[in-house]
Each structure stands twice: as C-alpha cells, then as structure tokens.
Image (cartoon, rainbow, N blue to C red; front, side):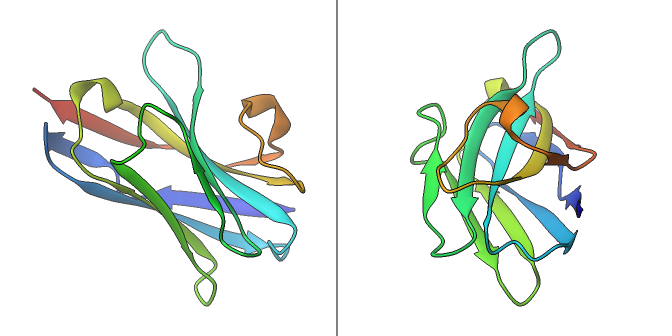
Length: 124
C-alpha cells in the first residue's frame, strides 16, 4: 500500500505561482511513477504530469509545458508540482497518484493509489 497526502493548494491571481506537495508513505516508490492530475467542476480528471521515481524523468501535458515543473525529494519521499504563470483554466482539484509501472501512464484508471486532493483556484 502507498499513502499519498497533497498540500499546498490555495487561491492565487492569474500569473501567480503555487507549489503543491505530495508526501508518500508505505511502500518504497522505486518502481513507481507518481502522477499529478486535476479535475475542474463538470470535467473529467486530466493528466498534468508525472515523474518516474528512479531516475527522475518527468513528463508533462502540453497544456502545462513550460509553466509547471515536477520534482521529487528522495529523502522526504515527496513529489512537488511547481506551478508558474497560472491561468484561470488551471483551477481545479489537484490529485497526486502512484502506479507501479515501467512506462509513464496518463490515464487515471492506470493509477492504483490516490491522495485526497487539494483545491487550486486561479482568479482572473
């Protein structure tokens, strides 16, 4: 089992920045990808990006490339999502999730473990 807890959400003006954290506990993540997803009201949950724990390779959705950065801290067993140049359309609940995989997964159904989510609201 892997337990995930997100933090760092909040209200920010367009153009601002936020950093979300995803603290993991339980199993070691050496064979896992940790992904970030978001869900806006009335919309499906969508892939934002992911990081492979071993090696630290990152993957991002086209909608956030150049603005969002994923990183990890091995010692703290924590993954971060640094969000810059935020737009109102970035508003939603942000979730981190984990899956044991050798390739990056972008669909929510491929992830086995989920955090409770953290709200991000970007005002115009």
